[in-house]
Length: 410
Image 1 (cartoon, one colour):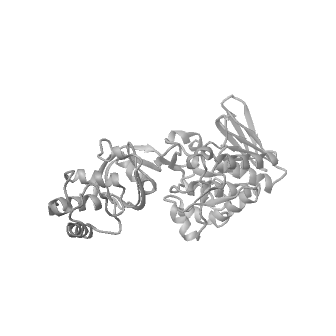
Image 2: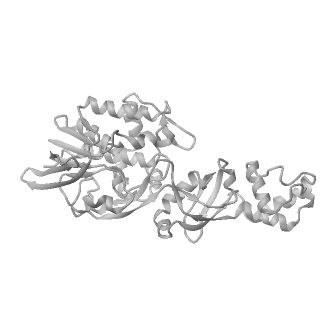
Image 3: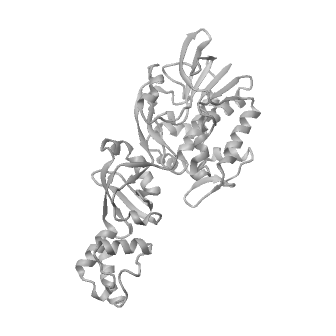
């Protein structure tokens, strides 16, 4: 049996290695269009590779996928985050858990993960071919199952008994045309996991300042999130923004990324409580200057920006602050509003929602319902997770299931 896997990323390698270990007599070929493999692994997590998220109850874990939750539930029961941890540790790679639940190799280097996967592929005699792009494929169905003919950009052709598509996401539906040609339904792709551009925002000079706990809500929608927010030289980033972008991916695309969002920088307090605290400071610290001593544990630069926005004079003391000034401060602290005009990709980690419609896929095996012997793994499917290791877990899980199931048919 010859298995060809198109795509040398996380899901492609997991599918190949699992298939080789499950069906040792099979011949397995990985085709990668780029000069190197596992490129997304290389850049993930700032070059550290966010392998997965801390293992937890499936009911919680599955809630981190804006699209594909129901589809993934059964698959994660076969290969979950703990399975991923065990898989790498059994191959000599220990993982560590950070405070936010993200898991990285203890070496803090994505190269550790790349070397583990490429070493496992080599040990299983998997033929990895780089700089090998696929133009199209054809298939015929006979008595012994499907037979695939794969046309490369070089005009050479390969044959296969089983074919795996693990090419990742595409920014436009045209990137899936070679798959829709075989009657697969394509869900329109849109970016997920992106940052918010706020041109000319008054907080732009504060790039690099972070607040560890804030509540963010997109006005006019149900989308909201609570967590860390990072100020950037183009607008806003950080986990709360990225997770919000994932959940709102389709709605925000329909708005052409022009929308307004609000931030409560003190999510445990409402505007009235903040106002009362500020008024009490007139009595508690009457001689202190309002601008020079930050309150609520906020970064001093951010506090100063709020006081300037509220038109607090440089030398104003708390005892001199009018209720009108303190009302403006309370509103800024609990209901800051910003107009977004565009987005930016989060570092090099391009993630999309959309792809092959899950209704076209057998949920138990990940085999196409349209083409016997054709399997899908990874982000090419209409499945995506929030930031934190969940997208890689989708890759490991779907790759593993494909590798296990691929030799059972025909």
